[in-house]
Image (cartoon, rainbow, N blue to C red; front, side, top):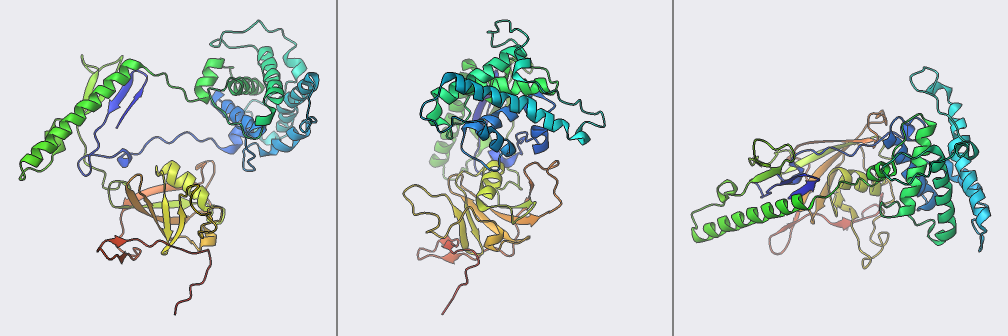
Amino acid sequence: MLGTTGFTGQCTVIYPQQSQCYECTSKAAPKVYPVCTIRSTPSTPVHCIQWAKLLFELMFGIEDDNSVLADLKEPLNKLRCSENGSSVKEDEVRREAVAIFNHLFCNDIKSQLKLTNLWADGKREAPVPVSFEEAVAAKSEGDTDVQAVWSVATQANLFVDTVSRIFSQRREEIGTMAFSKDDKMAVDFVCAASNLRMHNYHIPLQSRWSVESIAGAIVPAVATTNCIVAGLQCTNLLAILREILRCEKDSSRKFSLRDSGATNVWIKYPNPAGKSILVPDPFLPPNPDCYVCQSSWVTVTLNDLEKWTVQDFVNKVLKKELGASAPFLVFQGNVIYEVTTDDDEDDEDEGLHPEWSLKQWDIEPGSLIDATDDMQSWSTQIVLLEDPNMSEEDHPELFTVSRGQQQTTNLPEKRPLSDGVSEGPSKRRKPNEVEITA
C-alpha cells in the first residue's frame, strides 16, 4: 500500500497474518458538520463552502428531498419564471439571477435574524443581510488574481454572471449537474456563493484558489515523491518474491515477512528525521479486533431502525465507515442486499428492496447481520442496536460503530456443498414473508 501527500508519503507492506492491514488502525473520519451549523450558524470558511456546494447541487443537480437546504428549493423555483421557456432573453435570465441573489443573501438572512434565540446570548454575532444593489454599490477593483481575496462587489457580480451563464448556456444540463473542481462555472459559483455567505456572517473572505482547494480537497502532487514511493514499492515487492522463492526451494522454511528484507517506509520532507528523508517503520502484528483481516464482529448503533433504509445503511455504515466496496448482507438466512449490475434482474424481482427500512426486514435491536465483501476479501458480523436519544450534534451521521472479538454463539448455520465446502445462506425473501414448509 502506498500514498503521497505533497512532499510526504509512505510505502506500507501488507501481508496476511504477518502485518497490519489497512483497516487495522482507525482512520480520521471526514469532518461532518451538524445541519444547523451549515444552515443557520456558520462560523468558519469551511462551513460556508460546504453550504455553497450544497446550494449548487440544490439548484442544478439531481433533486434530493433530504438536502440540508431543501427548504430553499421551492422559493428558488418560484423565481425561475423562464424555466420552461424554449427561448430565454439575456436580460430576463439576469433578472432571475439577481432575484435568486436577493433571496439567498438578503431575504433568507433576514429570516435567520428572526431566530432570536441564536443571537440573543451574544455568543454569536447576528448576520448582516446584503442585497445585490448594496453589494455592487462599492466599485470592484478589477480583481483577477485567483490567489487574492476579491471584493464583495466582485463576488456579487461573479455570482449573478455565473448563474446567468448556467441558465442560458447549460440549461439542458440543469437537474443532472454535480460539483467538480474541473468545472470552471461550478467553482466560480461556489467561490462567489461561499464568500457572500462569509460576508453575511462576518467571516473573513477567501481567495478563489483557497475555495477551490477546500471544495475540491486538492492536495498538490509532487512528482519526485511519487517516484520515490514507486521505487520503494518495487523494492519491497522484489524482497517478498525472493523470500517466496527461498521457501519454495527449502520446504522446511516458512515464509517470514521480517526475514524477507521488506520494510515499511515513511517519506518525511522537508523535515527529515536525522539526515535521511526515508524513515523505516517496523511491522506491527494484525489488530485482533480488525473486522477485515481478523475474525471479528462489529456493533453498530443507529438512532432509529425504522428511519434507516437498507441502502442508507450500506452507503453510510458499510461503505463509508467500514470500507466495503461490494457488500453482501444476510439476515436470518435471507439475503437483504447485494450489489447488482445492469445485466442482473431488478432488485424487486430478486426480492431485494434497498429502499425499505431495516424494520421492514424484521430487524430489531440486538439483531445479527452477516456482511461479506468478496472484492475486499473480508467478512464480519454486525450487531445492530438502537439509541433513540442519540444526538445529531454529538453524532452528525446518527450512528456509532464499535468493534470486538467474534462471538461463538448464534452464528448463522452454514450448509455443506457436494464438494465439502461450506456455503453461507443465500436465500432471498421479501420482508415479513411467511415461509411455508411441507
